[in-house]
Amino acid sequence: MKIESLVIHGGVDGDERTGAVNVPIFQTSTYKQPSFGENSGYEYSRTGNPTREALEKLISDLENGYAGFAFASGMAAITAVLSLFKAGDKIIISNNIYGGTFRVLDKVFKNFNIGYIIADTTNLKEVKDKIDETVKAIYIETPTNPLMDVTDIKGIADIANEKEILTIVDNTFMTPYLQTPIKFGADIVIHSATKYLGGHSDVVSGLVVVNTSELAEKLHFIQNSTGGVLAPFDSFLLIRGIKTLAVRMDRHNANGKIIAEYLKERDEVEKVYYPGFSDHPGYEIQTKQAKGYGSIISFVLKEDYDYKKFLSNLELVTFGESLGGVESLICHPASMTHAAIPAEIRKKVGIVDSLVRLSVGIENSEDLIKDLDAAFKKSK
Image (tube, rainbow, N blue to C red; front, side):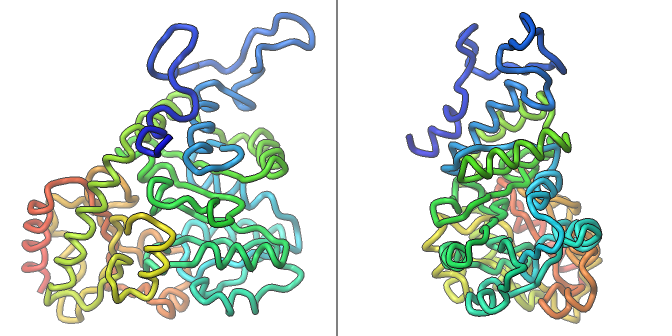
């Protein structure tokens, strides 16, 4: 089944008992047990819930994985995955990784003696050189948030396999509609499903897909033990959002290209980060491992222009956290999404104060350009 059909009919397709075309919301905390040692497959909704299970099967189908897991947020999903490791282990991470991922590693897991090593994951030799006996995983985003660096998933997976360590890929920006990391050798795929998978800025959620029964058993144990599960109603909303993923991502992609080309021509803009430009360092790899370039664009305003004035004068584009909704959203990474990363690291990799990140929505592109035009003119 092609993915355009799979987003609608994958996982659990409707309800066999009633014929309902949508999976019902099983809003229950517990289940009746017929007798001692017997149940209908469910005992307690933290351990398993039919609505959540339908979502978990759906994301597993979409990512070509062995099993899926749904969590109450993207950070809950990341935390569960990081809980696979033990004291003394280290994880190689991308050098401009999402600030929340860095924060939980640096401020929480470091307390348990689980460390990290920062690397330019676009440089496979650098990654390989940083692996020692303490490194147990390579954790990448591709493209990265917010500088849109592109990492060769297969190249990383090949190194990880050689060293007998895990490859973890945050696939939030691309979604399985555009990129399926497990096909390139990834062991674990993570999504902040709050973003494109939900697509409507109305649900906070996280998803994980693993490629083996061993990882599935371990992650289910962590999910059940720590309890950061996604609620039935939120699971229903996420299934509903995923049904329109294909048509939304096509529009996001088209608008992203139009707006990126527009920004590249603006006198106010010093630099545009977008992997769909042929002169982007990762363009060839992105073209090889994904079927699109997404709609996240980061750009730097020139010194003569005030990014605060620019942001405050936008009307159609919403200034706020998050990304991937049908509405266009813009944020200031240095003070918002990446504030947890030390200033010296931000500056070194290019997350400067004049950098803004735009998540292009599915509005009319001419209306978006008109709004950006007006804000640029008032940013001097």
